[in-house]
Length: 167
Image (cartoon, rainbow, N blue to C red):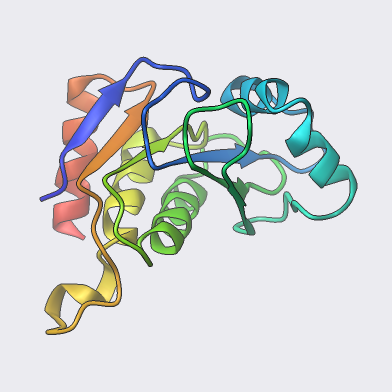
């Protein structure tokens, strides 16, 4: 089982191999995404303006070693149009990012996703890095040593782990 650990560090200062952020369609950057954008001198905003980053639902963009933050990689997930507490989007967006990052071994990945029910997003992240590899002799995905989650308490993290185990 992958340990899910609450983090109180900001997205710009967290010690992780990669961080996951979300962008909404036709909305200004906010929260951790805006903080990383500011720390990288507007990199995310520029790439959105150039069409390199899409806010289309479940689109993924990976940025390697952006200057200004501690993480070696940033994965940006498109969240589409905001629609309230969308459980399916929460699960699928975290799972898609985890699946992308699980292609290589990683010590820790930090999620700064502000979408839908967080327990479903945690379950998506946990299942995304395992997937069908659970029963394969030769693994295509590598589970994270630690999954860091921003904005959650122990009860929420435990709930996400229970949902992931059930799925």
